[in-house]
Image (cartoon, rainbow over all chains, first blue to last red; front, side, top):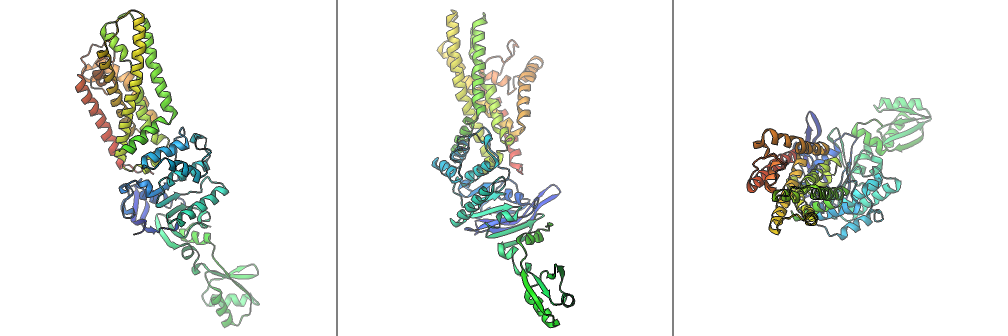
Length: 296
Length: 245
């Protein structure tokens, strides 16, 4: 049984179908990117997973149990949601002490997680004086308090500076290396592409793709070919006659969605000499946009 | 339940609001006792009893209870709170219990302080004070009222999530509606959770001179428990059915 299982999950708010029949698993020891444009239904899905939103139909479970059914949930699941807020008058240490009491964690864990996220020196300051990045780190400290088996991070790089983003990448990789299942939601593929093993892509509340990052966003389907011939006009005619798309690109041609081998065969059959033939992989972003239907 | 209770009590102790309201409770209660003790001349046993019942803990612990629950929405900490404690009804019960306990502790401090100060003032003026047995009787009634209104505050905050609206509403009921009810419909006013019923437990007319037959203490406690159950039930239904988006 996968640590996280979402099965046929749908959520309707009035006339709006925010999530439609969504199913996917998250595996232990891997970082899964939960990707989709703004409004795709990512946060609703995560909230349904965490028992904050009641699914209209379907289930979202951790080891077969709904979040509300977990005993000491902070030891099973740590979550940082996009709108994580803290009482502005409470210090970071006291915020974590409250959570440690609730989750029955030893008080030493408070100092340990403060150190893990680099907030030891600021621990006794009121959260009202924290920057957005510091609040994000505090949210992660809270999620790590119970050393959970599953870590869920909703847009975790929001508010982080470049060193903070690098730190976050290191943290999620480290958690996965320790056998944790990590789910990161983001609308920015570039921010998570370096960290994730698997991706689940959704748009308009529906699943568009799932699998490894390479399989979903970087497969052969995305390959194009840049070609230049001694006679580009003849090659263009030959490609069109073979039913292949072709576009002018500088002093050469772009054949989208077609491999160099296929282009070479067409050119050879037509007796056209090639002077340049190179594959052009579709960028992750292009693939992402193609899946989600967003304009590049 | 015990970890939740400990966590809620820690939450309560770790904000400046709590310190400010405890200070205000003590200062206001002492001010009333000192001024009344120094200036009043009619010292029947009932009036002396009223002096030592001038514990403002009830008002402030109710406000704290409202802030403790409705403040979770105001500061948007409710999501984190529900993640830590997904059983929403259990969470609210823990909050209610913790504010009841806080009310008892606060009322103990305030009542004992005003009893000492009041006794010193009355003794210095050569006025008879209350016997130890009567003082203890006043004390436990004050503690009981503080516990009940603390829990009630949490129920109100759970139902009315806008903290400002809830606080203003309670103040309007306590300072406008209750006195008006006592004047116009005393038979109804004695059941009020912010005036009549607590007055019945303390056995002191909340609006001096209204000459109303208050509820007996046991009945007043039952009425207060009924109000608490009503607010908790309504808030519980709302909490359980609500999506946090």
